[in-house]
Length: 221
Image (cartoon, rainbow, N blue to C red; front, side, top):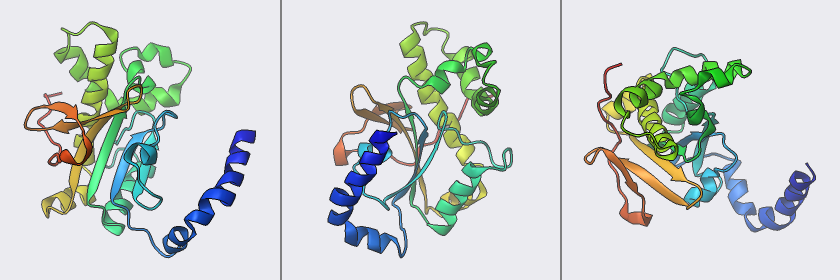
């Protein structure tokens, strides 16, 4: 806790003063560039990863970067998405998974979550991910490769869930919104974006990466 307190002191004395004008402007309004949906994992810092300033990302975090289909949960995810798209008029939404994800690692072994009933219930919104891996990835047995595939497939599943939200569907219909699927490998600093044309995640390399709105037809479930 002491580290957090010392951090606030350093922020107030060193950082805030150098960006005081920015924070004064943000007190009047925010106009974020994108809604960034990612995992709660402490090893991911969306602003550090994207090198964005305060006010540039509207961030939604939860275990497994999950987006429940619209109407299944009356919770913060739907409200955050609705506000970002309708009120803040973000032009892009990124769903970003990550390597070594504990939530995705727990999908195939729900019995290990018996002491975490809330987590087990939450991961039910990734049931499609689990089925896709079980039925379509039997050829991958190596644990790290299988987890990587799970993380990637989950990003795509959650993008499909995102499309069920009315504000998202409406914005997509009038071409005012783009959806992006990313995976961050925190041990190497690499980020990968889903390319629908290639059907795979490819490295994001600076400004040369301009992926279209991510979509694909999921296997029947």
